Length: 140
Image (spheres, rainbow, N blue to C red):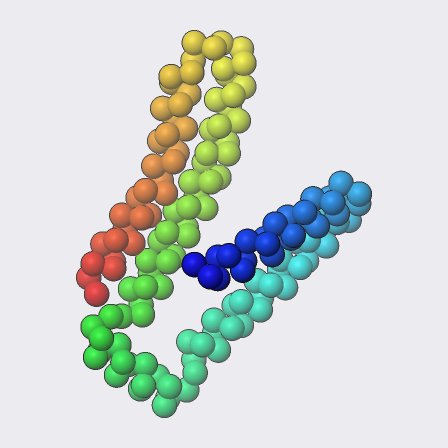
């Protein structure tokens, strides 16, 4: 809860700065933002690799703690990947189907019901990822 309250002003500030950069500089700012995103992704990947390959002593301690508590870190990582992948896929699907639905409804308003069903099916992809995550976490 506290982390969310701390992160909220940071996210709002980052959004404001990004929007101002994109308005003023256009393509150059977009390339800079993509470069920063790539650097952050590389740093997060390096941090993940360091955390996962912390050495034999740390691995034995983590294994003993996992066996003692009955939870498996692989299930948590799998659940996170399932939710993240499904959410990204749903976002892409909703973006395309939503744009097409709005275009179709602007020409023929009676297509509202059909368009919303198709957009809803695209949103269902995220629910499948959530179901897989619940199943994985239920196994631990």
